[in-house]
Image (cartoon, rainbow, N blue to C red; front, side):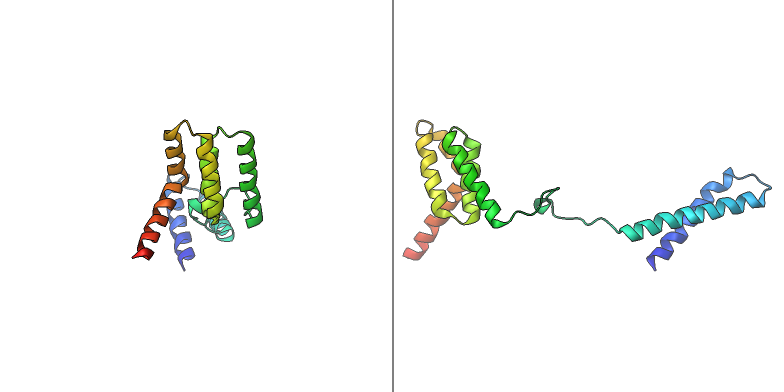
Length: 154
């Protein structure tokens, strides 16, 4: 029903807009312009109906031209990052990404192990350790674990 209403409104608007452009005494020209406008508006609306409306998706889950990664692929990427950090450990963003990835994957032991290694790498820079811990979510994880242990002790 809405398509007929949209088509009718588009045709009326098109005819009103093209009327001043037509010669006053030629009925054939008016009919030809009317037919053209009918076909044009019908083609536009028909194409839109065939193609459909674009779907709006959540930008957080939207991946442009990237196939969905399978869990083994994700684990391989995380392990690859860990290997790169072994050869180039002076990479704070890489450490934050690695620890965050371990936490997201649920590999808490791996996150703790990587956090210990990161603390050894940046032993002379406690501010960097704190920054990486905050960026990776390790501080929040530790706080959550501490609160859970306090709750279970009571």
